[in-house]
Length: 114
Image (cartoon, rainbow, N blue to C red):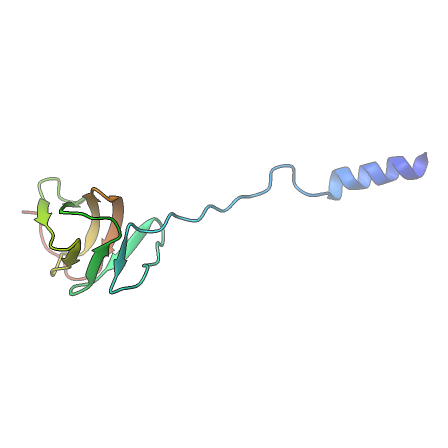
C-alpha cells in the first residue's frame, strides 16, 4: 500500500505535463515559386524580384496589398495563373486571389508610400 502511494506521488510530481505543447505547422502557400513549394516562415513567404509565382488553382487576377501603405493596392491580371514578381519595395504584402490569401515578405529596397 505504501509503495502504491509513493508511486502515485512520484507520477504526480514527475509525470508528463497535463497540457503538452502542440506546435502547429503553417499551411502551405497556394502557389509555387520558381517551380518549388516555398517555405512559410512566421506565416509569410519571402519573394524576390524576378521570382515566378505560379498558383496551383486557376487564378485570373490577384490583388497585391502593401500593408505599410493603405493606398498601395494593385490589381494584377495574370496569364496562365503565373506572376513574375516585379521590383517591389521592402515590406509585408498580402496577395489575395481566388486560390486564397497569403502573406509575403519582400526584402529589396525602401520606398516611401505613394
